[in-house]
Image 1 (cartoon, rainbow, N blue to C red):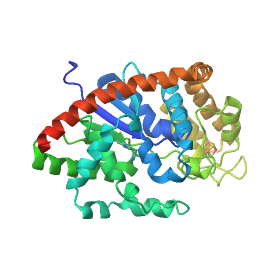
Image 2: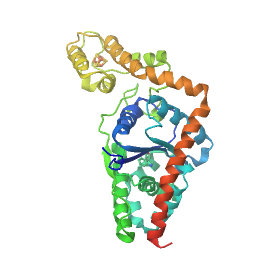
Image 3: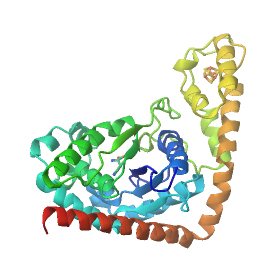
Image 4: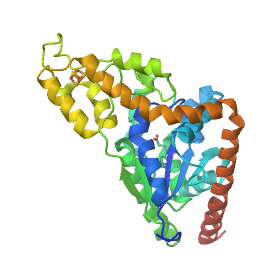
Length: 330
Ligand code: TRP
Ligand code: SF4
């Protein structure tokens, strides 16, 4: 494909700290692949983080670093993709403001995530103007690079629907400036954490990319399995086993089908079955661990990569904003 025809992809991640296997399966694997055919922008969305973490704003900077180290070490390649920090490209804020002028209030009032997040984070006061505008800022992130496609998980589908609606309205008012961004749904079954619930930092059940191999091994060895298998001789059902979600994500199909069969007939014990997942995960993370060592020794390398990314992003964003201002008549 010629450079011009390449699709533009944008996605973002909130800097909440170190990344876990759920991020790898739910986003990063997909992002890494997209680098090969598309022009990708991946951003650490600091302002989105601030909208719910403003009471602990100083932690955000450290978390930027944690996310960036994980990104680069796992395979997001700064030579292929633009990796940058949202709040270092101020144009996002200008577009957010301009979009907010034309977005009917009811469109925001019916965004389900606003109420959901308030319910999920009862200890945080996110009944704010900024948090209410979360999807507007997300739309600005996408449109400012004229992204054609946005790889996200199911939980972001509504925000993308919102972004498309805003795009149409803006284009109708001011001319065809922005392509309508398509959603690339990352359709992966949820990865379970060590306690069987969805893997999530807030549940304390996550396996982190940066966990030392011994810790990963221990977490999986003590991870919940299908509760039917009380004794070694009890058959199990892999579909009901949290560990098997790891097999689905990290063990080759042939091998995991065989394990599933031997689970159903109680031919294999859980520890042996887990050993296969452990080995596979440690293998996949081996190159990551090597890369990470490099950046831990020299953190400036990470900040330099982000600064380079910021510059490239800024160039594109500035150009778009010139067009937008002129379309509005400023
Ligand atoms: N809201 C997204 C999330 O919580 C993060 C995000 C911000 C994003 N801006 C974006 C995702 C733009 C895709 C495109 O995961
Ligand atoms: Fe889960 Fe494997 Fe044990 Fe079956 S044998 S319950 S799939 S860990």
